[in-house]
Length: 248
Image (spheres, rainbow, N blue to C red):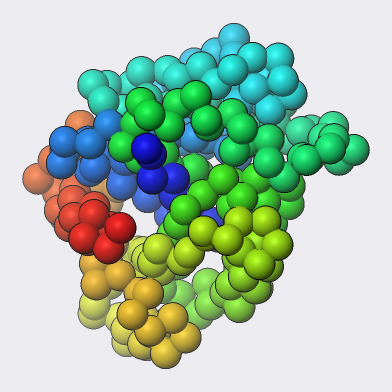
């Protein structure tokens, strides 16, 4: 049975897609089989791994035109791709009965095939994100260690609590992940301390350091382990994956 994890933050540019890809790749390094779901209409995860447009993406699956069709990126890591068409999905599904459970139903045939399913949520709190949360066991919240990144954190927790109460009793916050961290910056350290006051032990002990290799890897259409396995970014995500396994 798969462990399903959504990576969620309605603020863009916090390292959500980077973390989805590289947590998945790190879990593969640790011997797990992983499926990544690109649920963002911008399709950044799909583009970052150099996957061309597929005949069947998450959009066609959500519309009921196909089952989920995984694309193999490398051994033990598959992707359900996205496309710009997904941007219209929320309006198209607004009158569908049980629209919050569409993704959960799509996952059912695949759950025995993967150890982990990781969902890269869109930077919004709409119907697509609601589907992700309704389908998930855990939420990881990537949070850039800058002042503005703190704004809206309470809203994220409020949404998670509502989904847990109304739609998915099993949903838990798996952890809060500080990203783009530089220990030399007082502001970065202060933001982490503020996060810890709010989320306590939910904050991961592993911080993702600001690292140029993490920015370069998508340009090469690779995860960090394929691009620069000795980099600080690879080290951080491997440590994070070990921490996730110890928590879950």
